[in-house]
Image 1: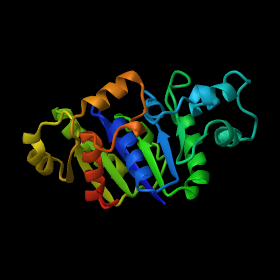
Image 2: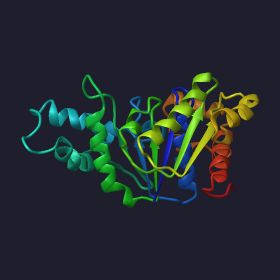
Image 3: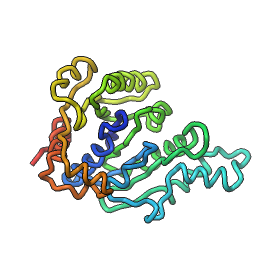
Image 4: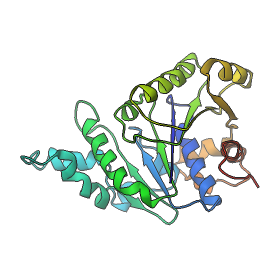
Length: 257
């Protein structure tokens, strides 16, 4: 089992990248996959064609709210995460043919994500052994990573946008992972579809990380995202999909046909 974390500032296309990563692994028959959406925007499910509400699947934040707010709080002597871990596995996991999906969801109450993150960490410890790959869509703020929802990952992909803040995000992400003790094998930098080609050499030098290449802009991907259509249905000839496939191939995850 390998864990791949994708991060980046909002608007860089990181969730689209995770969805196209998913398509890549499905096409390579490298399944089953576990998709983990820890971004509060909660777009990953839609981008892979899953309607959690219609499927009767709750986010971890919803389960925490239901357990601790609507039903009277904690029980004496029982840790909150232990009380809901079973519910997360039973009610918070979408199960599909090629991939399963779990989402943290939007903030359950004023304050931090500490309790949902702790519940997710407990669920992942039980789940991950069942999958070939775990793909995590992490938000720009890195707060979930900072609370170590997983203590060990294989590869980190940081999707860069056309801004100085994207360069700083890469440096900050690298520093946080090391400071909080998250082990990882490789840290890749990827140019988002709006990342200027003339900054690629700068990305290599400024970030100090391996620059894999750039995601090619594809109007069909943009139209699909706007319309709420699954990116798993994008044609294999799509420039964006082919570029992501090439990036994954360069990272050692298969061969582009």
